[in-house]
Image 1 (cartoon, one colour):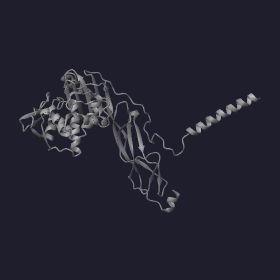
Image 2 (cartoon, helix red, strand yellow):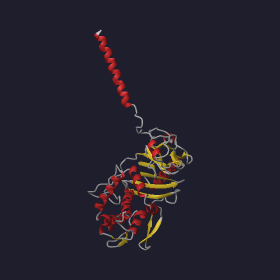
Image 3 (cartoon, one colour):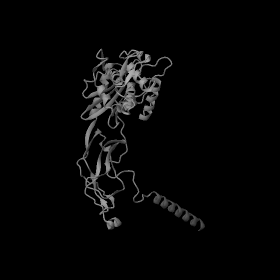
Image 4 (spheres, one colour):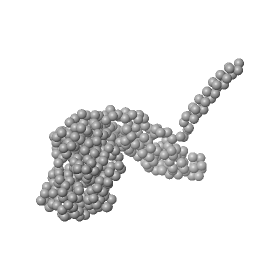
Length: 401
């Protein structure tokens, strides 16, 4: 009898522990939930980007607006970026201009070191003077190594100090596999280390650079005068003007790096950025870039997420200080987003709203945002608004509500 009592007690104790555990795990009313109300789909799975083979060592295509990766092949393989590295040189100079630390008409005096830079150049002479804007044109259009060096020395005092700025900026941008050792991308000399980067990091860098409108303006120029018209700048990017919508960004070539290019193009209102590294020829660089971009543009379709403004959310929002206890909230605008084909089912709409809103409120006043998410990236958003007036209540309304 005593053994039976112990077994019974043990069973009762296990049952009690299970009940306590369930009570602890049960959601408490009013507790904020991780998934927002109104989700189109709560799937968190992310589809891998397409992997296209081609006449390159590594490649990537991304959506310039969201950063979504559409195509990737060895995109984190570290290789020498050659002159694509100059995107960082240009970016830092442009950032200094935006911050007011530099002016376009500021005079730069060419050093002996800058005048000795080989490769692509505009033949700067020791002691010559040019404006920052003139040297930026030579850098961005002609990919001039001597102009890159002169600008770097003017901004930071030396190329070594400027390289430190490049690596600091790279860390800020999340260039995880990149290390800069020069301001131009020429092959490393004796005792020097080579510049290293990846297709992924170059795409991120290109995406950041084209946030400056001048960068795309210069990258899309085929030829331009320099040194009062005595010298002509030539854009080495032969895709400019031949592929529809292509307006940049930067080519590169050395024997060890192969032919490379970070390209950007717009079609049907969508901007993509592609990178190829390690192509065996200028021709294959152009062919593979156009193929990747064409694939990327055709990988999208337009999806109407919110067909019209004024559609109410299924659940009202708690209203404080008003004549009513709840407010009806809806979408303030319609929304259509570009989505990679066959990814429509992975879209999530997060209705970002506070737990409660405060009266008084007028019709169409914004109280939150509806955000469309894919793989953690925001594809678009619209305001969430109250759909009618909610005046402030009297003391009795406020007491009751």
